[in-house]
Image (cartoon, rainbow, N blue to C red; front, side, top):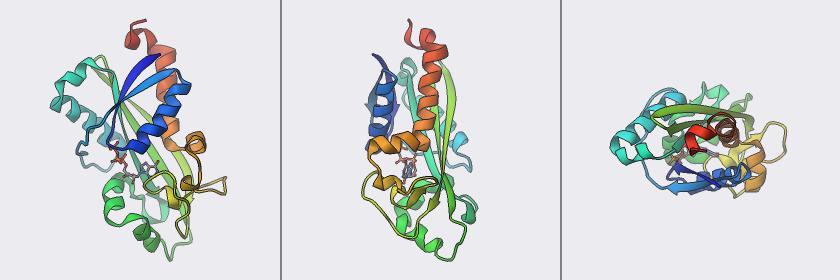
Length: 196
Ligand code: ITT
């Protein structure tokens, strides 16, 4: 089984990613570092800049194959808010705060976006995943993390917080970016990355 390192401070993310990695015959190793995210208005730029900053801070990472992942919730009627500010807004307003902001809104469409910055052999590559849904009118479910209790999948009757990890892993923004990365590694870069 091949090994990759996932740098995150979020245990839920690591758990989700581990299950998907296994199905691609990849063993994920957790590096638990809480890094300060660069502030920018675009998740791609944030993931890229955070990855570069991590390498500067910890030059020993240059010898590893690792990735970070940055995600955000984008609500249409709030012009994409909280988007790149999702971590801060979750800590300050929380789900209740978002539900309050949405009280008078008829358009409840939203999407989650996940951007992975993958580093190997001196290069960084981005992988993106997106999942459409709607914002509920009340919190539902106690699984998952973050905005999961208020995010209802467009074609399903369940919020992410009402799904098992395995079911969330069929639909989530994160599984899309992860699978794209794992597939691309297996298909094109196995030789270079894993020295096979
Ligand atoms: P890292 O250490 O990997 O950065 P984090 O928890 O800070 O972990 P992000 O910056 O990627 O994660 O995510 C920002 C916020 O968006 C996060 O705190 C959650 O509240 C929310 N979020 C991200 N992915 C989510 C998901 O799958 N379900 C629900 N909320 C999510």
